[in-house]
Length: 450
Image 1 (cartoon, rainbow, N blue to C red):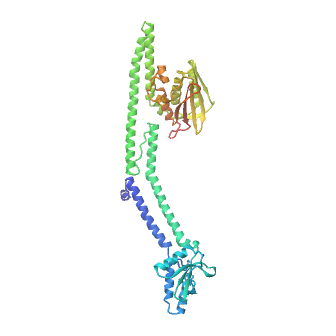
Image 2 (cartoon, rainbow, N blue to C red):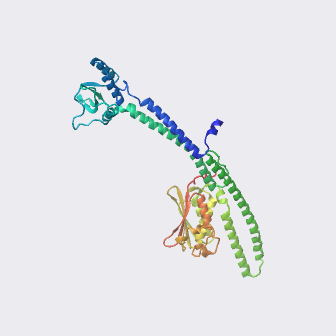
């Protein structure tokens, strides 16, 4: 077994080439066997003589007879062998004008004339006996050999042809099974592992190095890449924790010292800037934090989640209302989804006086969440760029507020994509903007938490 494994080629090219070569050789061998076993000269069991060689053999033996009695004996033996030959006086050597004979009869007559020098013609046999071949034996005698219809070809032409086709199809099937088992299956496993790691970096399962050598090399590279990315994520998490601690502590001291300033105008200005810096820090850390994908999937009632968000904004004086079904169970990451919707609603209330949060079950098993406002909207050329981290433009709505680093929509897009969905911006008529989020019921490769 170990010796056999050493003889198996390791590269994809050598394996496919070897498989094709072996398949062709085996196919040729089996095809030759089929032809040898089934494509043979007919005998008495077939009841007819189809080949030109058989007719030529009977004719030559008949011509070598020394007497009429011996010639009759030869024909009698040929008929017992299934030749169906009939002796007739000379004079009939072809079909009447306008009468057509079978292609098979014409082909046999042509072979007799060119290969054996026998004077032969395709003809319609007398008494309605069908198509046949008329052979001149001597100046006074002709021999009539019947040829069958196409149904008679089945035993030794059509049947071997079908067997050969079936044999080739079997080898093609073997090749397909091999390709799926040893080449395509490892590639599919690599694709699934890459997709799983892209959706959940915490997945530390290694990819098995099986299949051809090239696929094993890709698997090893993928495992090494996953290990290094996991290390980078861990380093980023520790860095975020350090930044959060090292920056919040001096901000807290600065806030405490500012509150002791006697000048109210100066104190309020400093506290406002401290709050703004703290908000920007929170927004940046929120964008960099890997918690969006670490949160497990779980069932949630989407209307309840959206109504809670609308209530929180309404409590602080914003006109935010929910419109949609009262119950709709969905599998998602509740905290991450709430954060994404909150960012979009917060962006909407900064630029519009009334915000409506809608929900409906769309086609294809999708849940569509829409946040619509009556603000100035976003120009069409900038609707993709506003999702870029830290992007701000003079014509965009985020620039007018003076709040944040421009990460709200970036965070929302990452959350929606982490659910396997999509987000898009549309115009609201007659005025405003609509942000539509589409979420699949159960994203591929993500399982609900148990």
